Structure formats: structure tokens, C-alpha cells
Image (cartoon, rainbow, N blue to C red):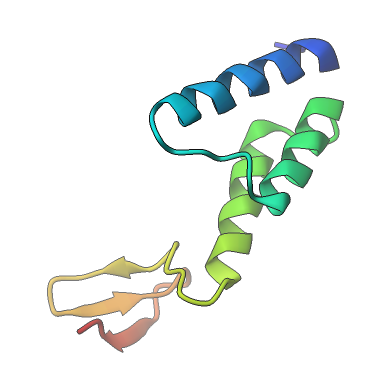
Length: 87
């Protein structure tokens, strides 16, 4: 389904307001806002917004998005390589 920029902006506003109402504000991250602007203009799709945002968050110090823990207490990076104990 193809939508115009005005509709995409309205959808984004509603999503941001729902997140705020749940106590999870998402509109204060400049990376997210930049990606959202690209989505609203139609330059990228929602999947790309999600992938790029998670990639950027994974690069931040203290963030562990993308790592999956196994039962042995080790974790695996995005390529499946063991990273060592998570304790």
C-alpha cells in the first residue's frame, strides 16, 4: 500500500503519541527522528527504519541489541559467534 507524506506524518504522530502515553517516549532520539523524516518523505520503508535504528543503537556504548544469550551464559553476536560469559 502506497501512502502520501501527509498520511505517513499523521501515522508517525499517532505512534509517537501512543508511545508517550505508555511512558515510552521515542521522539527524543535524533537518529530516530532523522530516520522517521526519511520514512515520511518516502525515501525508505518502515523495515529499513527499524533495521537502521537497531544498528545505530547496537553501536552505542552500553547497548546490547542484537546479542542473543544462550543457556551456557555466553552470548552470540549477529554473525552467531560466541562472545564469552555474560556474567
